[in-house]
View 1 (cartoon, rainbow, N blue to C red):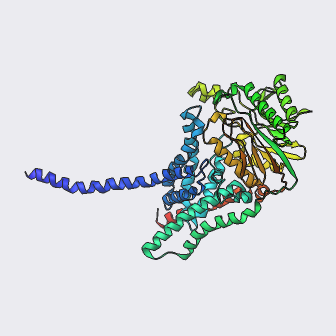
View 2: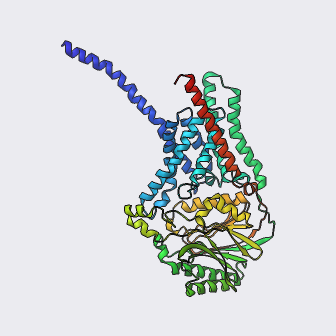
View 3: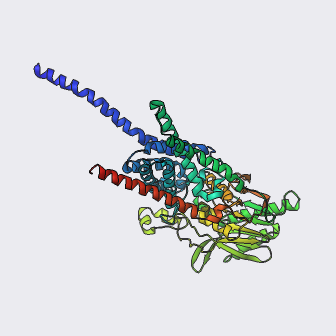
Length: 535
C-alpha cells in the first residue's frame, strides 16, 4: 500500500506540470498561425476584390509577430506569411498544368518573404523600426523581381493598390515608393496599437516613440494626397481615337495554341464587324487598332494566307493594326507585335523582351523532363528575347508596347515612355488561365502603370478582360470574359514625364540603402550586446 500511495502521490505531483507544458505549446503556435493568417489577409486585399485597405492590418499583424524576435524565428514566421499570401494569390498558375508547378513556384517565392521576415525581426529592435522594416520588404521585392530566371514580381504590394488612396504615389516614385508607403503605414499601425496597449497598462510611453508611430501612419497618407497633383488626364499633344479588339478563342486551355487559324479569323471578323459599325455611324473611326498577344500565331511573314486575312481586316477598318504574332526568324522564335498598315503592310515590329519562364521558355529543360515529360512538351521550343523597346508610330500618336507578362516589370514599361510613348498598350493572352483571378491581377498592374507614367493604358486581350484605362487609373471601358467585343474611345496623348518616370530605379536604390543601413545597425547592435554580455 505504501508503494501504491507513493505512485499516486508522484502522479499527483506530475499532472499539474503537464498542463502548462501543453498550454505553452499551444501558445507557441499562436505566432505561427497569426503569420499565416496575416498572409491570407494580404491576399484578400488584392484584385479582383477592392479591399486594398486590408493590406494595412495584414502588415500590422505581421509586424506584431516579428517584433523583438530573433532572425531565426523571423525566418520561419516570414515563410508562413509568404505561404499564406502566395498560395492563394498564384493558384492560377496551376489551372492547366496541375498543382505541382503552382506549389513549386510558391515554395520558392516564399523563401524571399522568409528572408524579409528575418530582416524585419532584426530591425524591429531599432528606434523607428517601421521605416527600416518597410524598406526591408521593398528590398525583398527588388530581389524577387530579378531572380531566379530574370525574376517574378507578381504580388508586389503596389499591384494590390489600384483602388486605394495610396495609388498617386506611383507617379512620385513608382511601385517601390507605393509599396513602401503601404507597408510603412501597416507597421506604423502595429507600433501605434502596441504603444497604446502599453500606455493603458503602465501609463508610461515615450513621446518620441508615440510620435514616430503616428508619423509612420500619417506621412504615407499625406504624401499620397499631395501626389494627386501629379495625376492628370489632360491631353498635352492632342488626342487619338483608339480601337481595342477582343476576338475571343474557340476553346479554353493550353490547346488554344493549336487553334491558331481560328483565333486569327476571330480577331479579323471582330475588326470587320467594327468596320461595319463605323461605316453605319454607330462608332467613331479609329486612328489605329490594337489586337492582343497571340492574335495571329500563324506567322504572317511565312504564311501568305495569314497575311491576307490581316490585310483584309486593315483595309476594312481603314486603319493600321498592331497584330500579336508568333514569328520564326533565323531559326529563332519570337513573340512579336507587328504594325500592319492597310497600304504598306508590315512596317514595324517589336519582339517581347521579358519572356515568361516555364511558359515561353523552359529553364532546366532536362531536369524538368525527367520529372514530367508532359511539361516539356508544352514548351517545345523556347522563345528568344527581343532587345529593343517597342514604340509604334501611328501617325501623330506613339504607342509603347509591354506585352502581357512585361507589365509586371518596372523597366519594361518605363523605357517605352522614355522612348517617346504617349500611350501604353499591354497586349495579352490570358486564355490559358481560364476565368481565374490572374486576369484581374494583371489588369490592376496596368492601372498602376497608367498612374505611374501618366499615360492612357490599353489592354487588348484575346479572351478578356480587355480595357481602356485613363492616366488616373480609372477604367472607362472594359469587356467581359470569353466574348468577342471591341472598345473605341478618344484618349489623351501625353508627353510629359512624371517624377517616377524621370527617377527610374533611383527610388528603389534609395530604399535598398535604407534597408541596408537598418540591417547594418541591427547587426552591429547585436554584436555589441553579445560582447557586453560576455558571449
